[in-house]
Amino acid sequence: MVKFNAVLLNTASFAPVQYFTKLMLYKWVYIEQYENFPKQTWRNRYEILGANGQVPLVIPVVKGRGGKVKIRDLQISYDTDWQRNHWRTIFSAYNSSPFFEYYMDDIRPFLEKPWKFLFDFNLATTQTLCDLLELDNIFQLTSDFETVPEDMINLREAITPKSHKAAPDEQFKPEPYTQVFSDRFGFTPNLSILDLLFNEGPNSVNILQASSK
Image 1 (tube, rainbow, N blue to C red):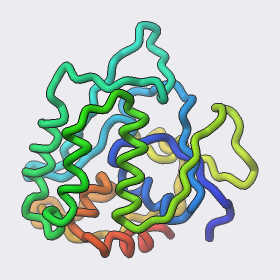
Image 2 (cartoon, rainbow, N blue to C red):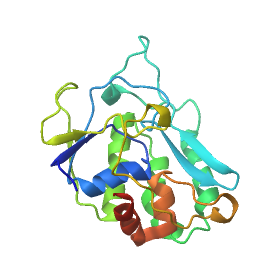
Image 3 (spheres, helix red, strand yellow):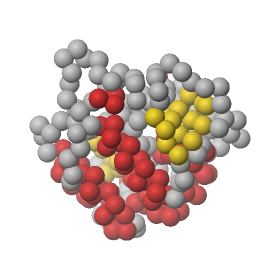
Image 4 (cartoon, helix red, strand yellow):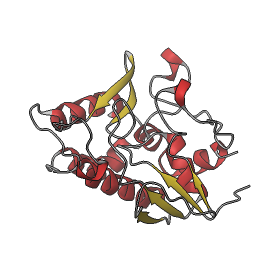
């Protein structure tokens, strides 16, 4: 049972299923905008399942001179055509999934239009995915890094690809669902929400609920 009124999360790119279970549990969502950007996190990467297994997709960023850049100020790099590469990889992985054609026109524009700041890109994609999942969240941005109100649960360190560094999350138990390549790899938990959406469509909400123990 949820004991808090709101949740504090990091920004994330096409966030994993675990992240969206929090958006299922908490209507009020605060997104951290004052942290320094850490490498190798869901802030600028997401994972899908392809014919050869899990595929990490990384959004390249412009590196600051001092090495410490506030996440809200971090710019996306276009030195490589990463958007085209990401979309081709997503299309290859999911074009045969049950709901790809239904949702593709909602997702593809994010991988066509240039975005200056990673934070803006993440916030827009998350809001769109919430709309597609019919999650009625109210998003707020943090006013500083240190303050965490008493009625808010801080999960900034709980959702990370580095499982050995993740804080315990007793509210998340991945519910299996049918994936395109389940016959090859079995069920692969906690991929990008795109995997769940393309495979399960409107039933994604039920999977999120079942995963929120």
